[in-house]
Image (cartoon, rainbow, N blue to C red; front, side, top):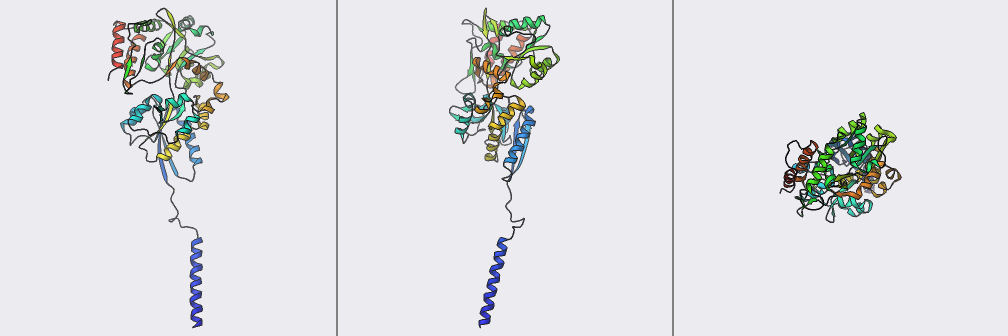
Length: 411
C-alpha cells in the first residue's frame, strides 16, 4: 500500500515538473502573436517623393516592432487634392498634403475629422498656420509649411535696390538689357497681386463655398477698369513675359529672365543659376490710376490631412504627426527650402537667414490668407490671359470685368 502511494506521488510530481517545463519552453511559431500589418497610402507633391521616402524610413525605424508597415507614396498635386479625394473618400489616401484653402470643404464633406490632440499642435505651430489649418475654432489638419505665397526674385547684376521698388522701372531696366521680367497670368493665384491693395475685394461668402467679388466696380478711387488698363500697359512692355513656373525657371537658367514672381519652392534652383547675384524682396509697386499701388499676394500654408475613412486612423495620425514634426520640418527646409510652420524650426538661424523666407515675410505685410471658392479660378484666368495677350478680342475692359465677376460669384 505504501509502495502504491509512493508511485502515485512520484507520478504526480513528474506530471507537475513536465507541465512546468512546458510552460517555460519557447512558444511555437504558430502560437506567437502576429504583428499587425499597417498599409498606408500617402499623397504628396511629385517633387517631395525623395524627401517623403526618407521620412517614411525614419518612421518605420522609430516604430519598428509595433507593426509591419507598408507605406505607399503616390504623387498628387496639393492644389487639387480636395477634388480627387472627395471623388472617392473610401478609396483615397490615408494621409495627404493639400493647400489650406481646401480645409473647409474637406471638413464639411466629412473627409477630415477634428485633430484629437490639437492643444499640442497649437502650442508648437505659428499662429497663422494654426488659423489656416482650422475651421472656426476647430483644428482639422497638421500644419506643414507657412510659405505658400509669392514674392520677387531678381538678379542683382542688373537691378539696384531702388530699381526693384517699381515694376515699371524694372521693365525699363530689363528692356535696356534685352532681358525679361516674368509673372504667371495663367494662374488666378498670382493675378490677385493687382487687385489686392486697391480697395476692390474678393472672398468667401458665409456658406464657405461661393464668392463675393467687386473687381468690376465702377466707383471708388481705383476702379476695376483702372486695374485692367494697368495690366494691359505692363503686358505691352517688350520686357514682360507671361510665363508659368517651369518657363520662369528655364529663363533663369538660360539667362533670358532676370526677374520674376514666384515662391520659395524655386529658391534653390534660382540660387544655383544666379549664385551670389540672387536677390529676393517683397513685390514692387505698379502704376494704377495715376498712383503707385503696392502689389498684393495670397498667402497660405501646406497642410497634412488624415482621411476620416482610413482603415488605420491611429497609425495614419501618427504618420501625419511624424511628417510635420519639428525635426522633419527642419529637414524639409534643408532639402526643399520650404518654410516651416513649426515655431522652433521657423525661428532657427538657418531659416531666418534664407533670402527667400525673408522676402516672403516682408511680403506678408501685404498679403491675405487665400480664402476663395472654386468658381474664382477659371474666370480670372480667362480675363488675365486676355490682358496678357493685349486684349485681342477688342472687347471693352468693363465688359470683360463684368463677365469675370459674374463667373466668380456664380452659385
